[in-house]
Length: 74
Image (cartoon, rainbow, N blue to C red; front, side, top):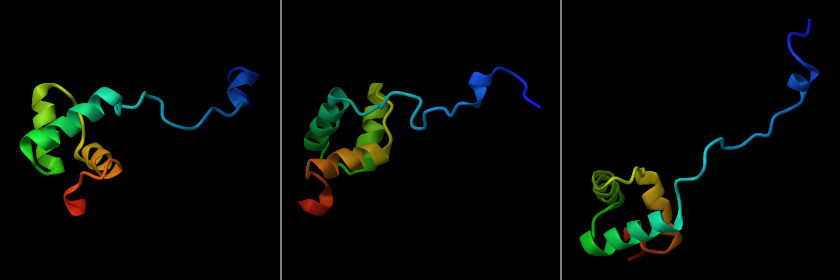
């Protein structure tokens, strides 16, 4: 019935298996790009992707919302 070792029956830790892409450096680039280009989150994500940082528009939106810099807030 059991193929493998008894250790395989122990539950594994749930959660992300990769490190977060949201670092302080990425946050700083997003905020800097927001003030330099005054674009929306999709344009900022495209600009950062062209610069070599792989970020999603959702991440850009989350960072801008956390710092109160989204277009909705002013």
